[in-house]
Length: 413
Image 1: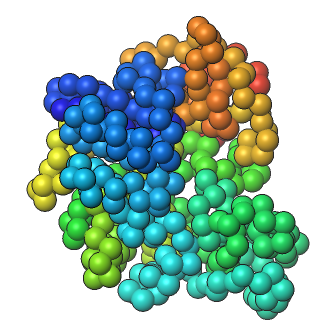
Image 2: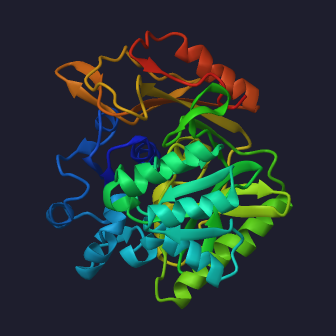
């Protein structure tokens, strides 16, 4: 098969690495890819938002399956366009992807289908939003309605933080149109975990659980990021918690989408929190999570190409998982998630049997590998325990000269 992966980040590198293991692959392409992806696949200089150029490439190169990684092309309708011309694509339509594209839509959807989540209100007026916060108090959560690269969420622990967040989104327009509407939610206490599943129409096939670390610095300090590392599985999530999450959240969600004519094919990601009343939804994504994918896919025993084809054909892929733990720590550019320099040279990075390296924001400048984003790399490892997997990761990170970059020291600890 000829396969095209759309995207340029760590999630896409992880997908490409897993696809490259398959004997079913003849040619593997990535558009636009990154410095790590080009070591495994043929990178094509097409932006992930240039849907017509991607479509033409797929036609000209007899692409049998396109896998879409990032959220922006999904919400722009890439799956719809590929399906219109009869090309096979593993991705939700823009109608289904709205579950991630609009937080206000997602909250209303969950309310309509009785899916457990935080209480909320939606606002476009800064004055009314501030009045609501004065009534509710802190801690409280403020979210930009649209896509904001994982950064449009503020968990405000004080009233000042909450009011500043409203000003950033509705007055200063920091997130442009994505923040023109905001959702204000009650603060939920508990441990977060991520549950991704392969989905086709009413069929849901869950992956192992994972736990992401969103804050920039150790001990969950600093601003929210797209994710500074993750581990899988989250061992404190019991079989009962998992069954509840499957039945009352994921299955209800895909059934509701079907009912609304938003039939879902692709990856459904539920960002969940274990409250005293059981799991509740913090957010939905309609694609592989990042960085959770980088620690979940390495545990998958199945041929990923066969999994995709089984799902699309309506067959049970019979997922099998290694009985191990996987941990990954993100190396980020100094200044992330704020402003940062690009083009900073990276040390020589050679993966080995005990660990692996996923590229997120890298490119080649001549023969040198340099940074090309906020989150630059993820160093991951598998082992029989979470502690051993984390130790492997940090033993390796200590070997590199990472001046100009930073990472958290407590992923998986």
